[in-house]
Length: 156
Image 1 (cartoon, rainbow, N blue to C red):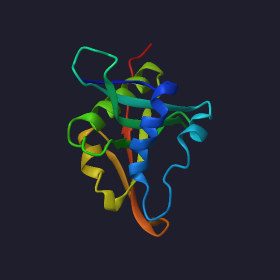
Image 2: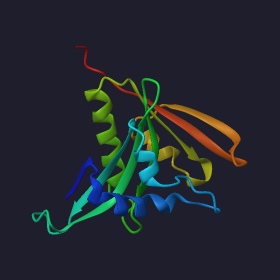
Image 3: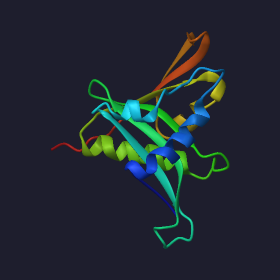
Image 4: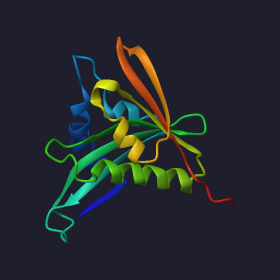
């Protein structure tokens, strides 16, 4: 069983291990999880797998996502799964949790960017990201996508 929650201190190291999988060519996509999370508007969410399905003491962080509030939207700064745990619905569960967070806080947009070579655009499109912009040689000379999802908000 997988569930998503806002991380607490005991999850930070395992979450950082997941997010470090995004480092490439010597350029760190994230510097230090703790530094980013020291900013009040940033939140770390983790996907946790209950290893035996019942015992909370035997849980493992299998995915992590950093959200940062940014001008009436949430920026999905980083999203990654632990090696060996891809294609198990973990990324989808994290994006669904971010969508629920946006709805609860009446934030109308969730957005992210991704290097084109990660080929993540189809994943985000399946998650409802329908605004897509291609930027040629944007990040250290690499092509990337900016993807956004409009959040359906319940009127107060």
